[in-house]
Structure formats: structure tokens, C-alpha cells
Length: 435
Image (cartoon, rainbow, N blue to C red; front, top):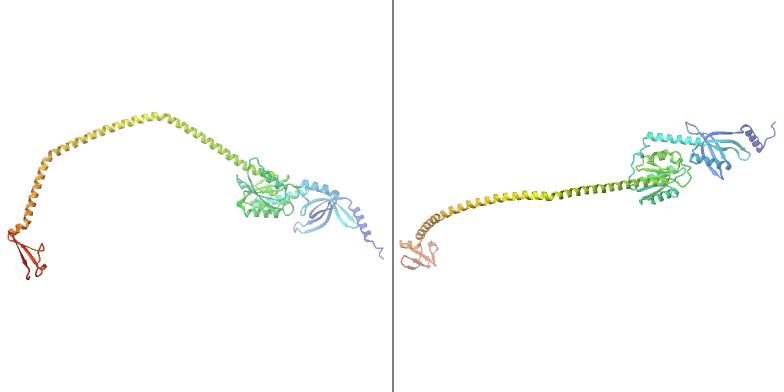
């Protein structure tokens, strides 16, 4: 026969006493947090263990850390690790078993060892760095060159972060009076959305790449916890392959993050990032100022050298001029002598030619006159032979019509009046007919 049944409360009392007797102490347990949430000052955690091969959960438990313990544990953990307790983190917890008749069983967290989590974080960070080295991208940013005139800066930060304001104030109030152009690309800088948000901001900058000289990723003005978002492979790959120098100032003092490792330059704070950019421009300004001073000195030195040469030449000019003048004077005298001799020789030859011509002129004139006289006599004879009167003397006559000599009978008409001239006299006739 069955005994008297137990009430549920009696059964739970029995379980509670059994646990208190069989598991009176605390235990250190390794687990991964699938969830961690704070409520009313307490922290409620879901613990899981995954199979190392398949990564599927093989154990699950709930855990609680009461307010009286959680305040100290949280502060110590964040101070050591630089991160908040969050899902996906591996932790080493000190727990003890607790069974409550009304709320059931749970593990109560007495402590969390931050060094265990640091070791796991370092392991993951080293795995990412090894992967980046394998891909050959870990030092790509170090090969870039920051423009010596870098003034157009793309900033990835939370628009509400005090660090962004500090960065802008540091740039605008620099001692040199340099002017910087800052464009903010807002991003989530804490929590699970860090990686996705920063990558989106980098893509937006890349779309307008020519407008910027460098990228600055800054985070500041708040707690230094929850920096795990900067230790991801995807974010590191994006930064490592980015074509502009990326400067990080995400405000923490612990070992450098993966993002810091792959960046062009890592600084601790946003103001340090601003100081780095100011110093870069100041070095350029100093270099140019030194070049200017050097150029002025070189020009002044050259001017002094040329002035000295001019003074030396100026001293030599009178002596050189006198030498040249004497040399040219002698040359002119020689030329004048040669010219005088040439003129005298020319005059002598011309005078001789004139004398020869003078002696030949009478004879030439006489010969010319004789030739001209003979030509005139011949022309006179020819004119005389052509004189019509000589023809008339020989018995010829000249018939004329209207004052013109008639050479062709065909030109005459019946009744024409003709005049015929003879050696002695003339006769008038009328054409009666013609053959």
C-alpha cells in the first residue's frame, strides 16, 4: 500500500535539504553566456556549453548574481577586462546551488574571474591577427602615406559622444591657426552593432574618397567597457584594406585591439588623434618655413656673391676700357693709313686715265666728225636719188587725184579729174574711159 503522498511544498523542502547537504560549497565553472541582462540591480544569466566539434549546445543552466554581490563583481570585471558582461563571452564563474520552494533551482553567482575572460579574449584576438597575417593585409595601412597637407578629415564616431566634441575643439583651437574640414559619419561605438555600423560608415566614405585625406575612428566620453566590437575579423579586414590612412582613438588603456593593430596610427584618445593631425600639418609648415628661410639665405648669399663680382668687374672696367680704346685707336689709325694709301693710289690711276683720255679726245673727235660727215654725204646722195624732181627730169611724170598720187587705174572712175605733173608744168585731164 502506498504511503501518504507528499505535498509539492514538502517535496521541494526535501530537494532543498538534499542539495544543501550534498552540495554545500561553491564551484568554479567554465561557461559561455548566451544571455546576460540586468534588472533591479541583479544580473540574470543564461549559461551554455557547446560541443567543440559541432558547436551545438550540450548543456544549459540559469544563473543569478544578486545585487549585493553584482555591484562589486561587475565593477571589478569591467575594470580588469575593459568590457561589460555580454552574450557570447566566455566566463569563469564561482557558483553555488540554490533551490527555492517557490522559484525552483538556480545557480547563484558569487564571483567572476576576469583573468579567464581576458585570456579568452586574447586568444580570439590572436586568432584574428593570425588570420589577417595569413591574408597578407595586417600591415597594409602601415604602407600608406598620410598627406603632409591632411586637412579634410572623415570622422567615424557617435554624434553624441563627448570625445567627438573634444576632437573638433582640439582641431579648431590649435596654436598654429590651421583650418581643418571635419565630416562626421555617425556610427554605433558600443555594443553588438559596432562592427556593422563602422563598416557602413567606411563604405559611405569610400563612395566619396577624393573628398578626404584621412579617416579617424574615435570613441570617448564614456565608460571604457564593451570594446569587443573593435576586435572582429570583418571590421579589421575593412580597415586594413581601406585606401586612406585610418587613425584610431577609441579611448582605452589596455592591450591594443585588433582595430588598433591594423590601423595606420593608434592613439589613446580623441584629443590625441586631433593632436596627431595638428602635428602632421605643423611638421609640414615647419618644413616649408625652413625651406623658405633656406631659399632666402641662398638668394641673399648669391646676391652678395654677384654684388662682389660686379664690384670687381666695375674696378676692372676703366683699365679694360683704356686698353680697348688704345687697341681700337691703333686699329683705326692703321685703317686710316691703309684707306689714305688706297685713295691716293685710286686718284693716281684715275688722273692717269684722265690724262690719257685728254690726249685722245681731239683725235677721237676728228675721227667722229669725219665719219659723221661721210654719213651725211651718203644720206644726201640717197635723198637726192629719191627726189621726184630728178625723175621728172628724166622724162617721167606724176599723175595725182585729189592731191594724192594715182598708183592703180582701178581706183579711177569715169569723169574723175586728174592732174599730171611734168618737169616743166602740169596738165589737167578728165577720165573718159579706162582699159
